[in-house]
Image 1: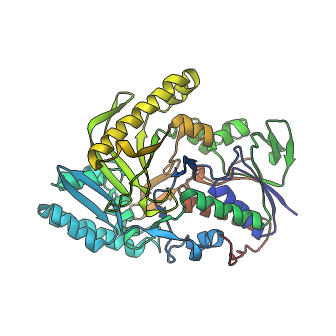
Image 2: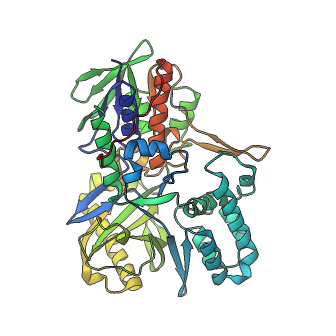
Image 3: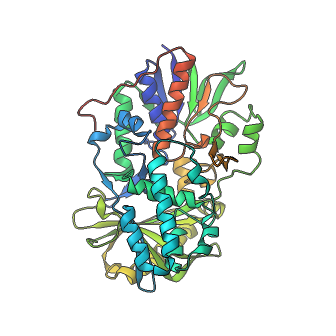
Length: 491
């Protein structure tokens, strides 16, 4: 039986393993940490469940091309999830603008906020409608070309400061294209974005169960120091304890930097690899501070899932003023907190990652003090906005770039490499051109990569990436690729 070793038990690695097991391969996954998931991470504190990954989950409509992949892994027909009827709200001077999933409601809301922008609003909604009709069926459409304009440039057409604020809040920035915003609006309208009940933990649990029921093996606490090669072909792996494991193929679903520069010792560097990992062009620049609060209170009338608020007192991190934060009120997932209680999470994007990593190494006490300072600042601000918070805080947790390095080993603590290594451009005929890093390395046989480091970022795309690699192996070995459906009772 052909043996395949997979490095990393994140969603891409678990997917690759599952589809290979379906097709008669013998697979083993080696995971550095003591649990699966990778960046699809969650953890528990004082009875509260903190989801450190899932904000929205794309490709979950039965009409989406990636849906069959998800269904084969997760039994989507029996996976409870929340469809976002209202995605977020932003506030300014007492006015609240709500981003509805339904485009009719969203258009009405925008025009109520800013009648003077009606013509521009109609243009935005019309664009979202056209994208909603086409994005599931084609990667390129001439209609998209007009929306390649950056959000920052498009803002010049808009009078309302509140609408401008909506367009530039997480996950978007002035540098993002309007197409990205309209694609989100289109997915929400098509009910192609949701939240899995149980969050990241339930999703990972299902992936692990699927993989192991198919006969796969996961080796936890297995730190791989080297991918072994001979005559320009991979032969297996070596752990930090010196133990070696042989394989016919090796697939890395782990951090790309560690894979290329550490495990492969920088031995196979073609022009593409040099550009990605040695030129400094694609070093992940952003990480995050993730504040989680367990509140002994129910937020029955809150907007879902995000509320963006303007801080009364800016939060200063490494001399950068943060004036707006997004708060997720997890009252849509009954598994996230004990009855009558609620988890709030606050994601704060930051640039200065090394200082946090170095501080934890050199001065743990000061590191903890800075975390407490940020959490206290957020509690004050949230109490000021919602009221009745400070005395009801039961749990406080703060993750920093140092946290993400420790638990995911991700290059420069990057937590979202959505555009990593992917060049997006527009052809002269108006088509959208997407060039992703290759899943293979020139000059090295029987080795593949999958996941975000080949541009397949996100939960659904990561799972599709694992399936794609499995299909490549089957094609090379002359096997007809097959998918074994989930059976009733797998959860």
